[in-house]
Image 1 (tube, rainbow, N blue to C red):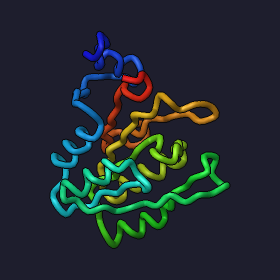
Image 2 (spheres, rainbow, N blue to C red; image 1 turned 135 degrees about the vertical axis):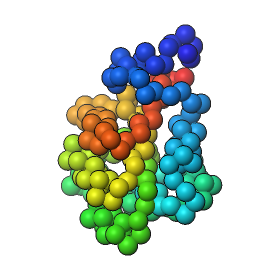
Image 3 (tube, rainbow, N blue to C red; image 1 turned 135 degrees about the horizontal axis):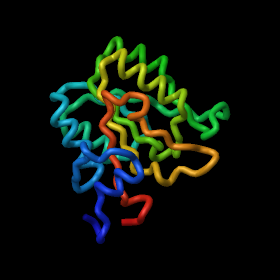
Length: 171
């Protein structure tokens, strides 16, 4: 409970079943717990860059290997940003990874991953046997014409979703 708000009930109300919900102190701690539990030192962690600096520190501090997916500024994307998933696919063939750490919507670019992009991410995760850690802390701050779709809708058996009320509710 935070400030009189029961978190698991809020998760169930906004995001569906809360049976598998676990409460931790913050998003970075949750990422560190999943990395520690599901990977070993030296394992690759895919991260869209630029990234929230504590994400990069968490990968480095856990002695995991960063596999970057660089953001590209483009007018072809409605958000002004895109990521090259063909290049990622080729990279993962040469440098396998265990996890794709997704910040959705992306921080710091604000890029909202659309359905086609989330399908592509799910396909890559399946093809390369990646666990997706999806930080969706900014999900409630997605505004029209963009729509946030939870990553778990596209890869339910391989996604750990991290959410917190801190951004949307200024906690």
